[in-house]
Image (cartoon, rainbow, N blue to C red; front, side, top):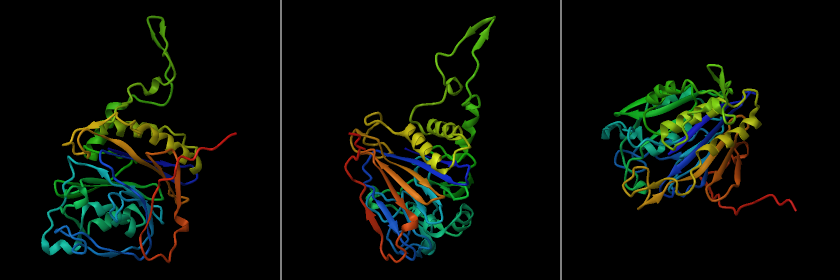
Length: 343
């Protein structure tokens, strides 16, 4: 389970929020990749180097998974930001021949390739039409092909979603700026119409034959907003919560608003218990948790993370990336809880 969204600020900023839920420990760290780093694409045989190899054009900061040198979420120095979202029932990649292997990557590298090569979503669209995403497996992911879709947002506030459906590349402009898991994005769009009645504006009491029926509290405009953890429900919740934020908010206020919205998707431990055969991960009767949450400020290039273990917010400033670095850097986000002592 994952939920992502984008907020546009009154001062031209764009703020991205995202939660990462999974049923198996992802052991994520903050990974920093410099410009000029040489990446090895994973080919159809599942080996690094037999796919499309490339040199990073942009520096990136983000979260890796399972000890792999790739991104599950991240932002580059041009403000392009996005993440891998699980799509186990719909993601099906291209049937790449051995001859085309050298122009292909593994699905776990989709976000890595986008963030290290492109500055805008239009560049992403053009770039992905020129490469393949193969069906090779990843050993660290139980020897499976990672089934993902990828929402991306640029610093101008433009949004797309990359999907591979029935073996074909589908890139969709996303005016909602919201993305969750299955079903495919086009079906999520259709579902929006079922909630046309929702509004953040308080409604007047209902009057029937001269008798007034008052709402028991404020919030009646959002009555019927789905609160469960299913991905179509989370899509609707993220859409209406994000579009309700006052448009007058500047980037600083939008960052704060984004943290409040991501909190709506934080799973209390034990609320979702997975059986061993569940496609969302996990061991025998494992619980799915919100392993980490992200808020990224594309205007000021600040990438912030909150881990499951504490309420600490870790901030990384991409403007301060060491441009002379030669290797990937990994930072553990495991500081003890740091309350502000008041007495």
